[in-house]
Amino acid sequence: MANTEAKKSNKMLFLAAGLLVLGAAGGAGWFLLRPAGAAAEAAGKEESHKIQATLSLESFVVNLADSNTNSFLRVGIDLGLTRPMEAGGHGESAPDFTGPVRDTIVEILSARESAALLSAEGKTQLKRDLLSALQERVPELHVGEVYFTEFLVQR
Image (cartoon, rainbow, N blue to C red):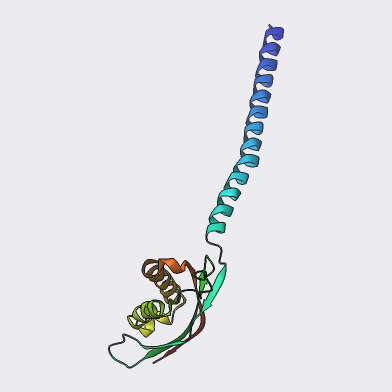
């Protein structure tokens, strides 16, 4: 009878050890294979949004939408482009997007209130809104980032 219990105990020990080894092997396989796939996917996304050129714009000075006071914003903006600006061919220069770009930016800036622009979140939201509007209105420019090079709110 003691011999039967010992056999059962040995079987359970081998079964537990086998499950432990199998679980460890599966976990190791997942750990080794999963990050490689995720890293490759992240690298592919990064590559598609990698900034390849920068377009510097002249500073903007706009009246803000504050109702109680006269306030203005002076801001310098550079645009990060995901594709370099290419010439039209046959010795032509790159297309000039200055008018549509500046118009879009002035429209977005002048709709803001000074209180919203003074917070870090307000500036971040402004960048998002500028990026979205530029990607929608001037898609051929391939804007991927908006950089503030100067930012002054006067109340």
